[in-house]
Length: 98
Image 1 (spheres, helix red, strand yellow):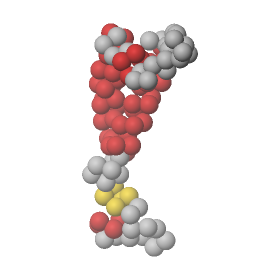
Image 2 (image 1 turned 45 degrees about the vertical axis):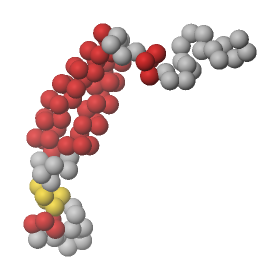
Image 3 (image 1 turned 180 degrees about the horizontal axis):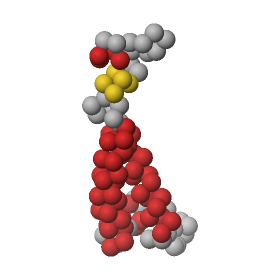
């Protein structure tokens, strides 16, 4: 795995994890009963984004290490998920008059 691939993989994992972590322990204005005029009741009052970003960074690092380890070790390859034999060398002639 090239360094660029590793960085992109980490970024994708980080953002996916962040989108999952954001709603945890979110307190909205409606929950607290203090809705500011002109805002929606679902607007966050206490979001704890800095703490959630640090939690996301740690979780993403662990997940990245596991996924990158699987990719680098070759435990799971493209051939393992290519159910219709459409990827890889010789795939264009595979399954045709032959």
